[in-house]
Figure 1 (tube, rainbow, N blue to C red):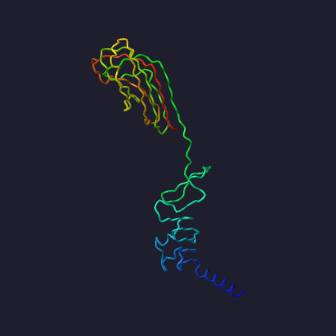
Figure 2 (cartoon, helix red, strand yellow; figure 1 turned 45 degrees about the horizontal axis):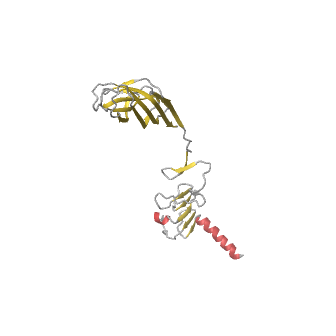
Figure 3 (cartoon, one colour; figure 1 turned 90 degrees about the vertical axis):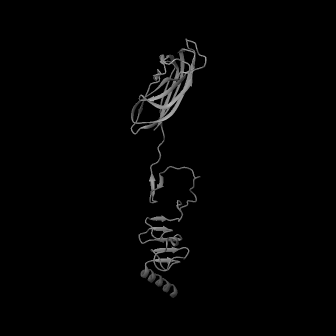
Length: 264
């Protein structure tokens, strides 16, 4: 009994005298300090390499693993770049998803909450038409394809708009014996874009009453600012290829499908 009392008194006296406990070190840097490899200096602060095997509890109640100067309630220094040093044995990438807040780290390594992603919605615009007024195409200017004009309203902040036009064009009149090249181009707010397709007139189509067809499919993604925007398709003969310059070719839309959408 006398030995137990003596030991207890010694521990109390030690705690009162030093107010710090060191394990494997005679030079504790905090209230409770374990030097795992017993490699710290006997005086002064341990080096960064020596701290990697240390665990400390400071007088402020901060816990440091791999560091003797934790600046947060729990700070871990793995000693390896881009590796946290924290491992959860029973929570891995294979664990089922549960409800809760998403977490991440800031520039200083502090764990922070992040906004949970919202469900992505799609706002579509769809128009299908099989009729349209006749129009003439020549080699001097771009002519609006009747029935293709569409107005899209884009919300605040702007959106990347997915655009799809499918056109079927019938020649109502074919002049000459050439096989010209006809371009269909997307215009936005009256300005030509880099979205177009050129198709050659069927060879040997010399009938003045037409009966020859062209088909176009135009797909693109364009960023549009907030507000109303007008989209349309315009045609032009880009190469006469035997057709006399200035010759007019009669055209008629026989099908038109327009689809556009943006992600909310």
